Length: 211
Image (tube, rainbow, N blue to C red; front, top):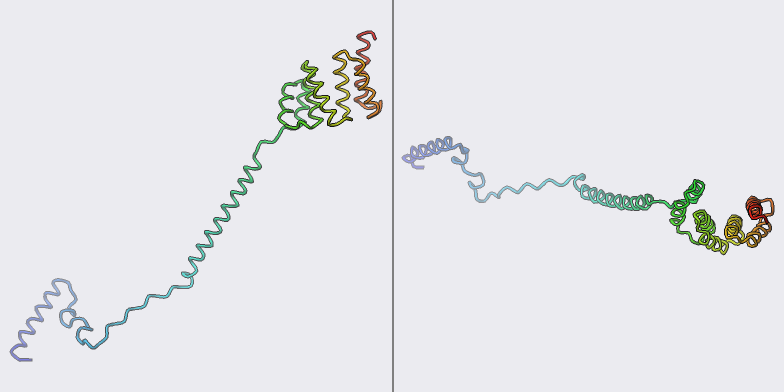
């Protein structure tokens, strides 16, 4: 370098350092410049490879997927249970026990409603109680129709024979009442309760009518 230019060079360098210090820039960048710019043959630094994902990172999507599947299955089970719970919470049908208790309490209209809610028109026991309840309300003909329908389902129903015999007495048809009594004797004998009840009703009828 020319000796005359040295003072100028150092003066310029000092000025650059001062400016850099004032601006807050790194001093080395003004003095030496970037390391790879000094020698164009030097290759640029290779990019730092990104860190490989850990085993916990690779398993994370799988875990999330499994969690989603499990949640979906649980939701389906909840639907089945609710269905099943919707299915278990439906109102149950009234039982014959309720109708019997209503009849014993003299609540014949309530008993008729209870029996009709059973929706069992082919059940001889239901038909028998419907006939009894209507007959006690004074609807003897309606009650007798229920009794006859019950006998079609069960020709040996003891209760129906007793009550139908009593209905014939209400209609002043002693002959048919006695036929019911004879049939009861064949079905369960003269010692069974329905036979004794109807026999007593026939005896009372004969006494009242002086027969």
